[in-house]
Length: 156
Image 1 (cartoon, rainbow, N blue to C red):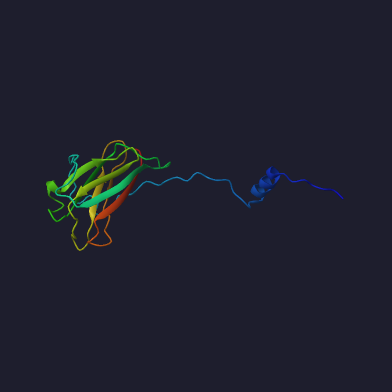
Image 2: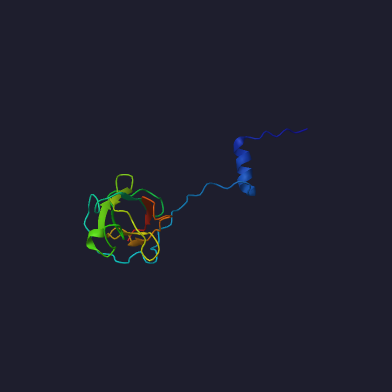
């Protein structure tokens, strides 16, 4: 009788060869596509602000690089909406902020109210390093006090 000693290496190699297990593959993060209506009432070059209007509502999110998903610090995100203090077409309803070291942004603004039947915000990445992206996320409820949007940017 012949005894065969199996090592961990031969067991794994056999499992890979027969297709029982597959080696880990790197996942790639696809870039965010602009949303329909996202660029409505867009104003190029809105100023970087600490807050839009009187505040009370928070727009938050993240900005990552397509492919590896690395956070992108220092990226300018423009935000605007129809709020309790003004229409989304009003210059005073527009502002921009920069992402922090973790690629996160947060900007306080007045409460978003429904426009065209939907409470929604508008966000844009519009600088030169990456492709421009416009988002128009819709709130679950008009009484929500936060709205998050996430960007995955493709180099220009």
